[in-house]
Length: 112
Length: 117
Image 1 (cartoon, rainbow over the protein chains, first blue to last red):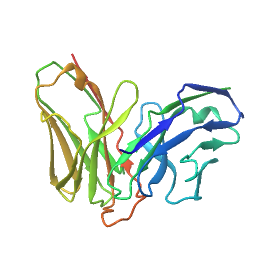
Image 2 (cartoon, rainbow over the protein chains, first blue to last red):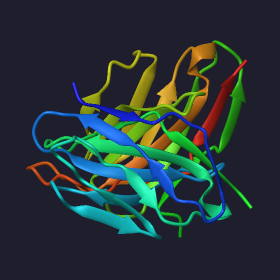
Image 3 (cartoon, each protein chain N blue to C red):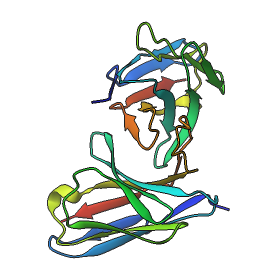
Image 4 (cartoon, rainbow over the protein chains, first blue to last red):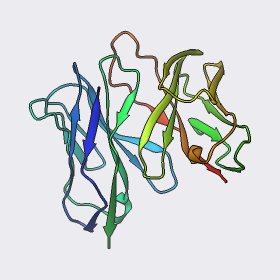
């Protein structure tokens, strides 16, 4: 079945550091890939997405590129802020499109 | 206006009780979902409804029964609550994407934190 694997956290960084959160997937067909973010005490919000190979999703300084050859969708940001502290979820929806399969989530803590 | 709303936000109850969580979306979407997030933050889909029709049931115990009175509402009723039901339950919605339109964004509610004592 489809699955998503994320790097384990927590990830602790100083403000303005470079961020990478690794995400790899296993899926049949051509899934769409997503990054969702959950701020403390809140629901999930879509951060960015990509629907086909080589697409780059970007939002709020975050970006991720859909790499079919390595089945990866790593999240990056050049300079993190304290306000980026949250849980980040990588997810996929298969070509049927009806459900999201999530990774385990990665806690990001940014210190000032 | 809140796009996807859930009530209650917190629910503390005793084992064996029956409880309901309500969800409403005002986005005009056709598809709604329930997800369960456990204490380790792991998220898993439970149910999905499209225009009041059940389309996903992910081997959830039959103590959990979703009900969709119309396409803007998807409620979750839980019978005979158990300690293991303690979790955060998220409702979500998206446009109907049957027919191969992948990549639809799902919009999540704020969650209902259920604690079974």
